[in-house]
Amino acid sequence: MIILTDTREQSVLDFGNINHLLHKQYVDKVERLALPFGDYAAQFKDGFRPAVFFERKSLADLWGTLANQKNHKRFKTNLLRSIALGAQLVLIIERPLTTILKGHKFNKSGRQVTSAFSGYSMVKLLGTLRARHGLEVICCKDRSDMALEIANRFIGIGRERYNKK
Image (cartoon, rainbow, N blue to C red; front, side, top):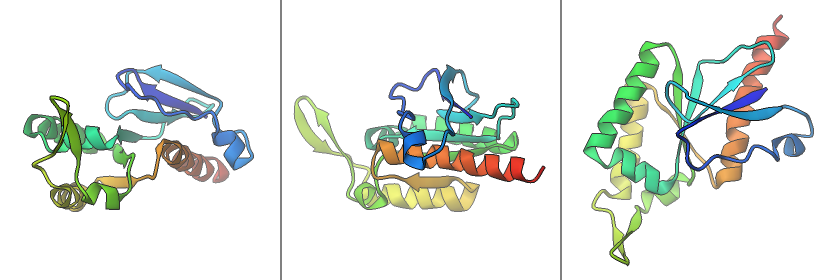
C-alpha cells in the first residue's frame, strides 16, 4: 500500500515505523501529490484508491481552521464537496479531546494569549459537524498515534476489499 500525502501538507507524518509496529509489511512507500481534499489518502498495488481522506490538524491548525470564520467556511465547503463526491473526509487531530476541551493558547507579540474561542465551544462545534454532516473526528495522543490510526484504517479497507475476492 502507498500512503498518499497532499503536496500542501506542511508537517508530513512519519509512516516509517508502521510496518515494525504491526510486524508486517503494509506501507510500501509514501508519495506526495495533490489530493482533491484532505492531507492523506491511500493507493493499493492494483491502483485502487479508497474514497477516504484524512485531514490532519494540530491544535493550532484546528483553532486556525474552525475558530476563524473564513477558514471554517472553506473547511465546510471541502467537507460538503467530499460528501457530494461520495468520499469520506476524516478529521484527525493531534491531541486528545480532553486537551481540546482546555482551549488553545497562542503567542501574540511574545506572550501567551488564550483564544477567545473556548475549548468547550470547539468540542461543541466538532460534535455539531459530526451530527450534521457525518464528519468522523479522531483525536490522537501524538503524531505516531495519528500515523498508526491512518495506516490502520487503510489496512482494514484493504482487508475487506481483497479478502472478499
